[in-house]
Every structure is written in C-alpha cells, then in structure tokens.
Image (cartoon, rainbow, N blue to C red; front, top):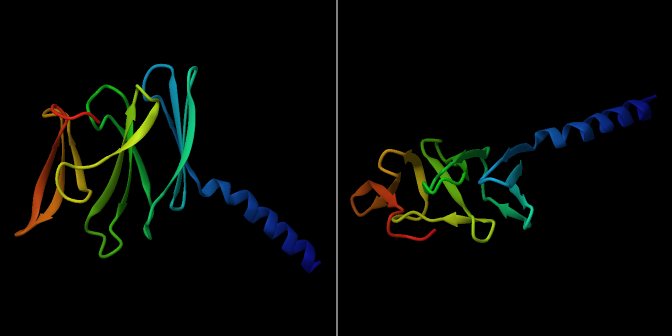
Length: 153
C-alpha cells in the first residue's frame, strides 16, 4: 500500500514539473514566431519562420525568480524581450538582460547599455526612443541613457 501511495505521489510530481516553466510566445515581425520557455534559471529561445529556424539556451545567474517582458526595446518596430529579476540582496533594484530581434539574421542579440555594466531599473521611454537605466559612477548612482539613432543593434 505504501508503494502505491509513493508511486501516485511521484507521478503527480512529474505532472507538476512542466507546469513550473513559464512559456511566452510572440510575433517579433510578420511571419516570425518566437517561443520563450523559462525554467528556473534556464531560458530556451526558439525562433521559427518559413526561411529560418533557430533555437538556443541562455543561462542566468539568479537566486530570485526571473520574469519575461516583451516590448520593442530598440524602437525598430520588431518585438524584443527582456528577462529581469530583483537583485539578490535586499530586492531594491531590478536587473534586466535585453535581447533585440535581428530581422537580417532571424535571431535575438543581447543588447548592452551605453554606460554601466547592465540595465538596472530599466524604463522604456517611447516618446524619446531611449532606454533609461541606473548605473554607478564615481559619485554614486546616475542615470544612463541608451540611444539608438547612431548605433546598429
């Protein structure tokens, strides 16, 4: 009887494991479908179109829960995505990794800010077409403005 209870418990556990994954599907541009599957600190990215199919795995160093956000981060009309988390310390900052869709190659490329080591407390300013984030300079925290008018992503 104990074996039967254990077996039923294990089967129930196996059914819940896939439910722990967060899946997001979106259309970066016409005719292209992107699927993101976030399982713990591993993100599987699959991009499919008539001409191209690509999948890859991105690993994150994170203790806190990761979250996926879809937006047009470089203001080119294509949907991009970010993965963010609260900092592992006191939970006062949000850390983002931003991935922008490259229509020429059909893949997502990680974007780096114009200052600092990464996107902290990221805000998307659609009116000015810039990304605003925080970085630490010589005198403490400062605002980083990442622009796209002069750069190729």
